[in-house]
Image 1: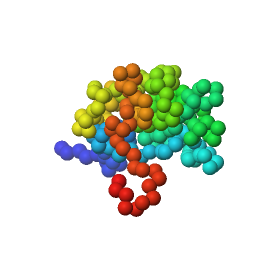
Image 2: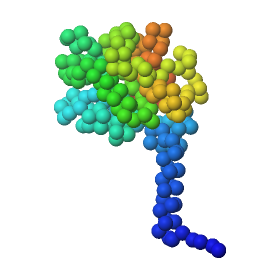
Image 3: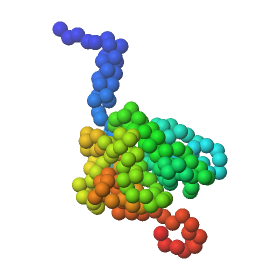
Length: 213
């Protein structure tokens, strides 16, 4: 004797089966297909001068740092300088024009967001406007706890094809890739990577349309 599930019961059963499959499928940066892709083969949406929030001429962003990250920004750029009180701060051009607070506070916000979002991988690019030694930055990373989440490559110049996948970074709990434009020294702070070893920036003030980029 054959028995059949009522249509509603069958629909509920299929719905729960689909939900169970969706919940069991890992996602990385919001997409399952990114988990098996190498970090070096992914485009990250970025925020230039991410700490400078407001509506003054020296500000660049309208959303808080946490809101930027939750909106999908996964590449953060920030300028640093030493303020008059000798604190390493986030300053736009100089600390008299716009001082967005200590680097440690900024990094702590990133740490809290990463803790709340365990399947996300972020990139952080810091500019070293005062050409400070990397130990100054390492102190801020240690104070915020981000040093434990920062990725250290196995070599000083990791080839494009050798970068780990997002799922590997997530499993290893090294979900933050940090670049420093000047002063990086992997012998002293191995997770502060030299920006220009890995990528280049297009010219900011080129006015010649024939200039080859």
